[in-house]
Length: 453
Image (tube, rainbow, N blue to C red):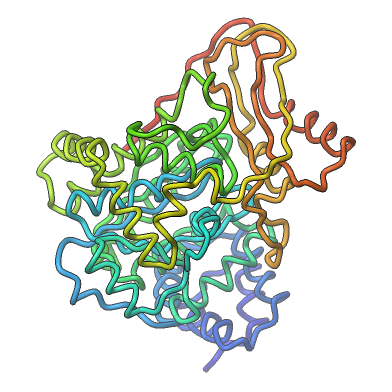
């Protein structure tokens, strides 16, 4: 007997355990469009408050996979391993990691997402590149994997369509940070895309959905258990998101930063304004190498993490990863000439202003989530599901945690809309000044990789 949406919502609201059949019924009705958004939102909020046990979470994952097509990658020769991040501010790792892992011998079928809440999205970043297409056909996706070794795509209408609908509503109903919903969303896409292995970059800290290591560990263990039940080889890294990753946040700016790293310093920087930034993109590069090493070991390309890191570093420095990146972008509609002349060809606002330190001291804290919401206010993210992204706006970070500053030291350069008034700039400056703290004494900075589960 089929349960109605109202019955399922009431049962979850009251903290009862849903059966696999009830979850299947709800997801099927959602996929057909039989349930209005307000009932789906009620289900999401009930789940956020009452949670799901492991069996419910596995059933939700399975139902979301079965809501659409599943890609078969049997024709693609080689170990197929993907990476996924739970999201953060300035997290642009996938743009570097996918071509780097492909250069090392993996096949990387990456189904990525758009911005969610205060966090940026891989697809939004790549769409700053003129002509790049996020939704090739399944045949084109497989062909790119075979030829290039990596492809980054968004969800099509037929790949986990239930997740696509839930994803958009989670963003605008403040139900993003829910362990069963996160687990089912991540794994349904990865299973449907046909990958054999997954390395999960689970962010922890002020700019992550998981604010504490305890909370993140719980999510990581849930994902590992559900992945095992689904036959997916998985590894979870808890990594710090107590400050933005790299030196940029905003779509075009992040693409430019990735191009700099992929070119391995062999050409003049395409990223403006960072001549005085002492940290460079050290953290972004380091995390990418560590994640790549885990992917290579998981996929059997190397026998150890040390061997994987050595191979990844070599392929980044010799230009192999850059070549793969260009090939991947071209295979999905972009032009190599636009990448080679990225600073001129990619959209970047000409209007900008600087937020400066007001006192002497050490930069000891970022409210990274607040910085993410400031980026949304600038237009780099969405407040509503239908909002359009402005790829040309964003922030360059001139200083990172531990940096010593004096009055007038630049902290942020803000690339803003040409329509922003002086009053709006002044308000944004005040908003951004609340996103960092300067203290008289330095504090310990968390290491980049906190745990491996």
